[in-house]
Length: 370
Ligand SMILES: C[S@@+](CC[C@H](N)C(=O)[O-])C[C@H]1O[C@@H](n2cnc3c(N)ncnc32)[C@H](O)[C@@H]1O
Image (cartoon, rainbow, N blue to C red; front, side, top):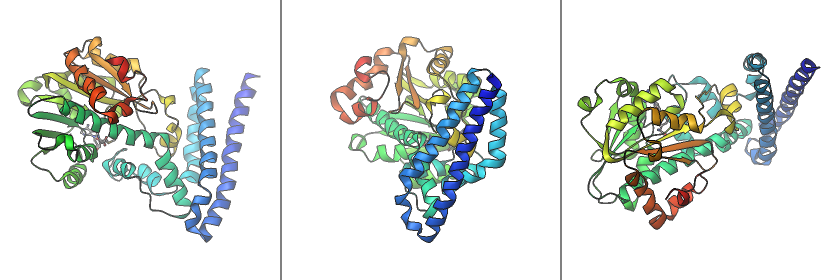
């Protein structure tokens, strides 16, 4: 009885994908004749694709809750080998799968998400729009805005020179935008950006074009994580150390060692702000990302992520958890001095409506924190 019902849900899911295929052939035909008319079909297309990936998530959740992960593995194999090809359209999915820089989540795709400016037409455009409007792409844009605001608020609350360390800086678009803000005009602020990919460094240097206030260091962050005596190799101390889109790929051991060493590079009142993806099923785009785009992340629940900071030596009462507006990403803000950690946020409430809005979607609102 049980076996039949599992099989039934698999059959229903495959039938849904079959329906999508049939519909997609019609759409492709119509859009070949009139490639600019994609807008007429976008909403219906989104609903169809959302339906497929929602049902896929329900199937996986159900199987995993029954301890039948093997069924999920079998389905994934079938999907990747036989069905994925029907979902590979548009520039972004192709880039994600091809990984031209050798790894997922490179600066080109991240900055394409920031720019949100698809240029394809026809059936490809339906996919490119779908990619840009997927929950995870929206979350990536929100995260960039949230961290820009964190930079501005740390700066607004400090007197004198400010030194910032950004790990895995990618396109560094939040720095580009922050430096244009009146908050940083005439401020003595300096950014050190650590990044492994020379292409990302070249791109960010060109985008920011401010060598007096930025320095790019080509390095793998694991070298910072694994250094036994980090204080002696890295002499600078920072008011703010932050990282977005890096810990999503780091396992517990490397995350722990990195956070432990970053703690040592903070000024006494410095703040460490790290973003991480939350548990898998909070991401509605997960199967589009993983099974179609082969873009895999390490998902962590909130307590596990906070636990890494505590294991690294931070006191729990000096940790603040904030959330990206849709709840896809979590941010931990850590400091060695609780009053100093919350001080930048204190000023947010008083002086910066933008930042209040940025954190309004968070599980623990800024008004509760202070
Ligand atoms: C998803 S992007 C995020 C970029 C940027 N932080 C942002 O949020 O816009 C990840 C970036 O991290 C870099 N990266 C990944 N692993 C790294 C490592 N071990 N050391 C240094 N950089 C790394 C990649 O080259 C890429 O530019």
